Length: 137
Image: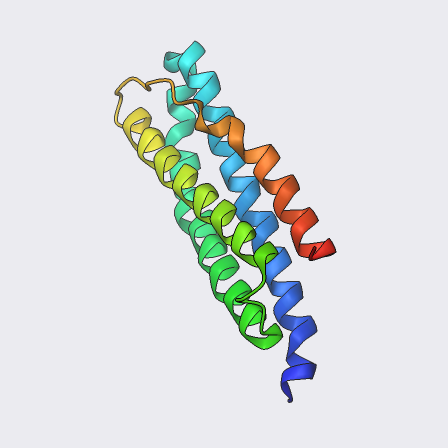
């Protein structure tokens, strides 16, 4: 299999992992938002989300990084401004995921959740990442 043959597979796996990763980040944000309003009713869901995070979201995030870096290498795009901007946003999403994971862990342990407004960054970041990836300005 040549690099040209591998490209569509790398791209498909990157997109699939990105969908699962963003879905996990959105689910975490929703649970935490609900947890701030009604922690006693939402807390039982925290262990379920923690398990989902470990089994699906974290491996998907690692896949996004691995397949994305593979695509960037195969395309020779590291010097491109659009890729640098996309990488900054992916770092931000990865950091948001880390913050959310810590909050979900605390919620699962019965501790309160402090309001963190970073979840509002998720939707605009994902839209900008998609535009940058498709348009490659």
